[in-house]
Amino acid sequence: MILSVLIAGLGQMYVGNFTRGTVILISGVAILFFSHLILNAFELIPPFIFYIWQIFDAGREYNKRRYYAVQGSIACMDCDWSNSSSSEYCTRCGKRIQKACTNCNSLNIIGVSFCGKCGKNLSS
Image (cartoon, rainbow, N blue to C red; front, side):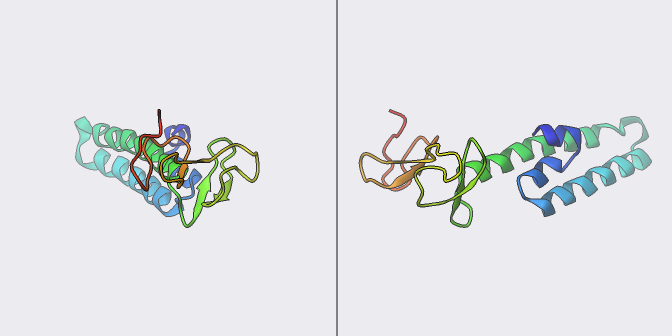
């Protein structure tokens, strides 16, 4: 999110979504340019709304990458290393990335509240 505060779309590019980041960057410049040409008195309102939205979008994209397995891999929350979805520990830093459910023994990513297989509450 910090990178998106500096430059629109940079946060999305950081998490690996280059197409989305490029589109946001180009759209931000276009919105700024066209709102200046068309709106005159309120020219900064649409770019400001778009700017705030893209910051929250960068945070959402980061959370998607961090908490959900993408193409069979899980990113470590500490070092951001891509691990196999069957790994319980990060292969780079050794931190636990998944924990087995006490009810059904299926692996769940650290930080989720409920088991993805049986629905048991994991936070207790």
